[in-house]
Image (tube, rainbow, N blue to C red; front, side, top):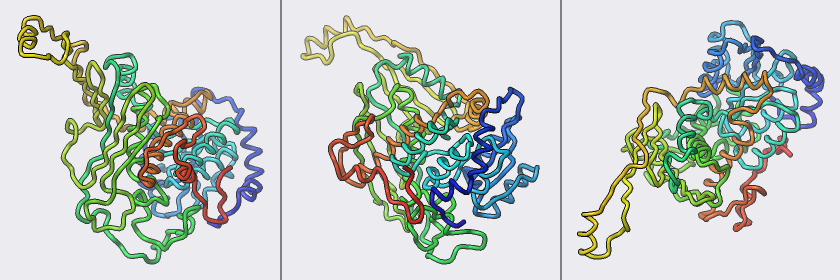
Length: 450
C-alpha cells in the first residue's frame, strides 16, 4: 500500500464520497441490513467480527487486512464471499458500504477513522481510540464535521452488568466515592514476549503498510500481531490497552469525563528476557474533581491477586465497596459506627461499649454468571444508532476523553512528573515540555490530521 497525502486521498475517493454523501440520508428501517466493511481482522478484529455476525441485520460485504491468512480465515467464517482488499482506501471507495469497523493497531486508528468519515461511512473503531491526545481530538472533529455515527470499542458501556453497576453507584448506593482502583496482573517472567532478532517480514506481510505513519524500523516479529502493544510506536501499552476499559468504567460511575491531575511511576523492573519497551511494573494515580483518587496497577511479573481474586475494578465509598469482576460484581457494605471516632481515653472507650450502635447503610449484593467482556451488545447498539442516527453508548467524545486519561499517565511516566490537566483546553498547565507529548510527528509522506 503506497502512502499518499491527505489531499491525494481526498481526490482518490471523490466519486465514492459523493455517492456516500447522498446515501447517508437513506432512511434505514428496523429490518434493513447494515452493509459493513471490516478493516483489520487479527486477534481483536476476529473477536469483533464474531460480535457483528451475531446480529441478523449486519451484512459484512468487504474485508481488509495486510495479511492474507487473516483475510482467508475471515472470508470462510462469513461464507458469503465478501470483497477482499489489502489497502483500506480501496475498501472505502465502495459505494455499497454503510459503515466500517476498524480493528487495526492503535497508530492507524486516526487516519482510518478520519478517511472513513470523509468517505461518508459511519465508524466503529476499537479502543484505545488514539495513540496521542491530539489525534483523538482530530477524530472527534472529523466525526462531527461529517455528521457520522461513531462507536468507540469500549464495549463495557453496552454490557447490562456494567450498566447496572454504574446505575447503583451513581444512585448513591456506595455513598461518596473517595477511591477507585483497577488492576492488570499477570506473570510474564522470565521470558516475557521473548527477544526475536530483526529480519525480513514473512511472505504476505507488507511491513511498510503495517508501519504506516509510525517510524521506519526493521521488521521484528514482536512489533506485529498483538505484541505491538509492548512498543510505544504503535500502542500506549497496558495502561491504554486494559486501562482504558477500567478508567472509562470509573469515570462513567463517577459522572466525570476527565481527571484534574495524574502521576505515574514504573519501569522494566523484573529483568524480562525480551525486547519490550513498556513497563512490566507500573502504578498510575489520577485525581478527579470532587475528591476521588483513582489508581491503575499493572503488575506483569507477579500473578497473585491484589484485591478480591478476579477483581478488575473496585470503587470504595463511605457506605461500602463495589468489586467488578469479569463475570459479575459484588457490593460489600461497611459498618457505620454512630459515635465519635476515635475514642480519646480508656474511660471513653469503656463508655462507648455501652452506647455503640453499628449499622449497615446498604445491603450486600452479589451478581455472578454474567460476562462483562461480551462485545455483542456494543455491536448491537452501533447498528441501532446507524439506523436512528442517535448517539452511541460510547460516542467519539466519550471514547476520546477516556483514552486521553490513560495517555496522560504515559506522559507522566515519561516525564516523571505530577501533571495538572485542563480538560477543556486539553493542555497540561504546569509542565510546558510535557505538552509536546500530546502529539507526535508522522513519518513522511503521512500527514498528522489537522
